Length: 354
Image (cartoon, rainbow, N blue to C red; front, side, top):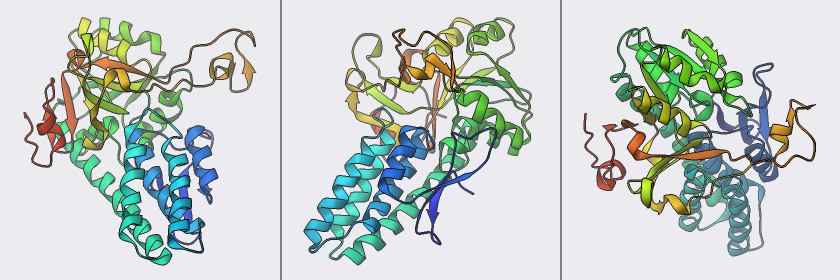
């Protein structure tokens, strides 16, 4: 099944429960908006494109679970639920963006029945489009890789971070489809180990040669000349800022910036793979809220105490990587070299550099 989709039989959202991986591959059914919000917060569904799918499907769910004596009362209730969904996680722009787009279907509807039909049809189309654009993105990115290249990646930017196929790992999958023997070095991605728990599972299922390393070994394997490219996804790409962020930044899982610095030091190409829906041309770097997560993610490891219960913890989920450290940005319309031109990467008439 897809990472997230609408289950017509149950009339609700079905998703892979990523909190159970790698021990169990199970399906979770979000039957209420509260179920979906909780799923987003605990990372049952995650990844910027995956959260975009959750956002659009969430509005459809809210449209079907709410009612009202008048259409205005009904619409107000749906919008209240939609706001809860959109703000469940702040950094990935896809979530709020797809919620807002789906709410446009409420404006176009004239009855509750029509609103329910329109939001669900819209959500299914958005999810289909995510798969299509990720496959196009993968094909463009695969052109940057040579036969026998070894790619380092961080966190999970594969099928389980999207509706299907993936962004950074989509590049790897497309390279394999093109008969390139690309292998992967995956960082474990502390503190929640998405690289270890999720990325390695995906890659092995796709038959990709994979080596798992601790996050702190990334510099060592670059020193050894074992990495030909670092390819990561993105939760938000912005095009403006101040100081070192004058040309914008890529917001991705915490640790991405460190790997970008190391790649720059060792002359390893640093590639960001993300659909254009992840590009936020309206916000500057300084205005992006970086989610800070519960300190117990560090104080404990799978329920076992790992640090003093009262030790202060700083646990940001993302960091900004300056565009000066990015060699290529791959989208569904092509490969671009920073600094990124707003019209080129945002508008439908975009013309890639390669």
